[in-house]
Each structure stands twice: as structure tokens, then as C-alpha cells.
Length: 206
Image (tube, rainbow, N blue to C red; front, top):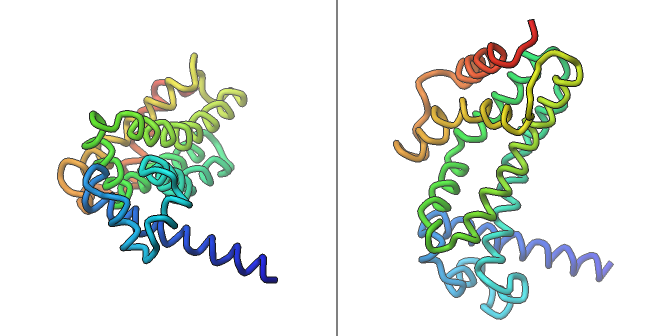
């Protein structure tokens, strides 16, 4: 019991650190957020902070994994949707467009883009994690539909990039350029449906 309680407290403290660091990184930027500031915000000593995360890069990477994993969960869940090609691709496109329309998602991408030149390794880690999580979901659906003969693609990763790219501009790019809270005037479902129709016009088997 005592060991379990200790692990629970340890896990809770780690979550408090991650929450405080995530808020500060998104508000102040990666470069301008010091570990001492994070420690104060989380209510822990600097020594305790370093015991959990040996460096700021390690802390940021943990935040990246948590963000991409938790916020991107609906995209991964969309892979399980059953139905024909249009149904499955639409579910994936809606989940992805919704993910990119979130203010916290856009803030994370904006911060990484701003810091990419000075912290290329950290930025690349975030972008690669996003590609693995989100692109992997799209590739999985496209591979399934290729096996059933509903679509025909030469390379699943290219086709996945094209599908997701159709959604990026009106969701993520709009938010980064116009403001994290700004949404397209068109409903996400309409945006997703248009992307799917364009994709099927190119890869659908008639």
C-alpha cells in the first residue's frame, strides 16, 4: 500500500510538472522558459525537476509525446471505423481536421516552428512524432483499402501525405497565420468530405 501510494504521488507530481511546463512553453516559447521557472510553477524544487527530467530538451520531449499521444488519440481511433472507402477516409479526415483545429495543437506547432532554427533536434523530434502518430494512422487506413481493392496507390506514404495535405491548409495553416482560435467558416465535415472526394478521384477504383 505504501509503495502504491508513493508511486501515485510520484506520478501526480510528474503530471503537475508536465502541465506547468506545457503552459509555460506555449506561452513564453521554448527558448525563454527556464527550468527554474518551470520548477516554481509546478511547486517543486529545481533538484526535483531535474530528477524527473535531466534537461529541458527531455522535458519538452515528454510534453511532445503526451500531446501527440493524447490529443491525437481520436485520429488513431478513426482507423477502427468500419465501412467502405468513403466512410473510412471521411472518419479519418474529420478526426485529423479536428485535431489541427484545436488551439493547443496550433500553439504547439507554432512554437516548434518558431524555435526550429535554434533547437533543430527538439523541433525535429516533435515533427517526427506527429508524422509517426498521424501519418501512421492514414497509412494504415490506405493500406487496408488497397488490400480490399477499393483504392489503388503506388506508395501508401505518398497517398497519405496527399490526403492529409488537403486538410492542413484550411485547418493548421489558417490557425498559425490568423490565430490559434480562428476556425474556417466552413464546417469541418465539409472540409473533410471535399478532401476525401479529391483523394478518391485520384486513387479510387471505379
